[in-house]
Amino acid sequence: MKVAVIGAAGGIGQPLSLLLKLSPLVDELTMYDLVNTPGIAADLNHIDTDAKVTGCLADEGFEGALQNADLVVIPAGIPRKPGMTRDDLFAINGGIISNIAENCAKSCPKAHILVISNPVNSTVAIFAEVFKKCGVYDPRRLYGVTTLDLVRANSFISELSGGKLQSKDLNVTVIGGHSGETIVPIFSHNSNSQLVSFYESLSMEQRDSLIHRVQFGGDEIVTAKKGQGSATLSMAYSGFRLAESLMKAIAGETNIIESAYIQLDQSIQGSTEVKSYIASKGLTDVEYISLPIKLGPRGVESIEFDILNHINENEEELLSTCLEQLKGNIAKGVDFVKGAN
Ligand code: NAI
Picture 1: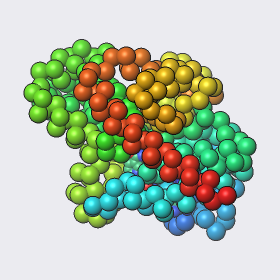
Picture 2 (picture 1 turned 90 degrees about the horizontal axis):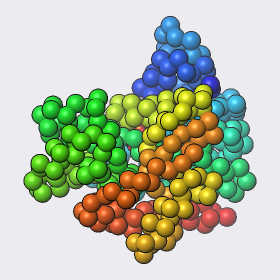
Picture 3 (picture 1 turned 180 degrees about the horizontal axis):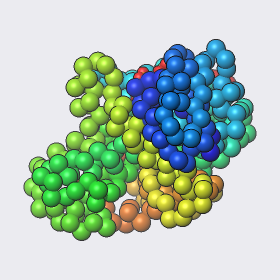
């Protein structure tokens, strides 16, 4: 398994690379960035695990980093500063993602691609459009990383319960997109009945504030870091969680479910049902959404859309707001590439 991290010298890239270096599933790790990767790679290579790490710099080109990669994880770009929304990153990160996509299309068109760079709601569409232009797009292998939203939902509800709900027993479903109101946590339905009972025991104010905290949890970090960036360690953990699950699925392990922001495409089972659900809300052109997905050797096998049949009225309303916003975010990503023609 060869994994490439693009933007590997950054706040997310370094701890993410450390976690990948510790994974027995990784044989080869290439770290690509504009700066510093040879030194960071040398440092990681002193760890006595078997993954071989190489640092690549932008002036050497992408090829060495990307050639034969099975998995490419992308945290390249600028993070938010206080007062910024993820959408404020679009102009700069859109160009960075588009350039990385062109190079992936050339050097590793069959790799699984995990996009972390914000605004994820749009950067995934940019990546897909570039791959389409190059004639190498497979929607089953492109994932926007939204794992941090559910990781936060687990942490926040556990904290609110005063430790009665232990994080290790929690797997809250979060659907929609990855920014503010497009993040829709589903607390009303879960296989963990204790979690649902606890949620139902909360007042409406407590429920609203829990949902708001999940939607805008990223702002807490941006504010606390006082201009020094956004979530990095919790993001590295979350990105690694998705990457590790995917590596297990590629290696043949079955029944692996994670959530990610993917394109609704007929090659993915369940897409038609999700599209019908969206159409029933009077919306079209919402081609991407984050939902639980089953992973297999070829990537996304199916969408576990049953959750949509169980959400309560409030969550339905949140989802409608989300879908309206996603539509615009997606169109912006698509236009970014099409407009460049
Ligand atoms: P950072 O600034 O610490 O690191 C970014 C790295 O990307 C830097 O080392 C920089 O040199 C590199 N870079 C910039 N342009 C590049 C290019 N063209 N090619 C290769 N490398 C390039 O930022 P941080 O904190 O690591 O965040 C990275 C991205 O991840 C941001 O866009 C941020 O908004 C996003 N993010 C996404 C989350 C998610 O849940 N999906 C959560 C947190 C952050």
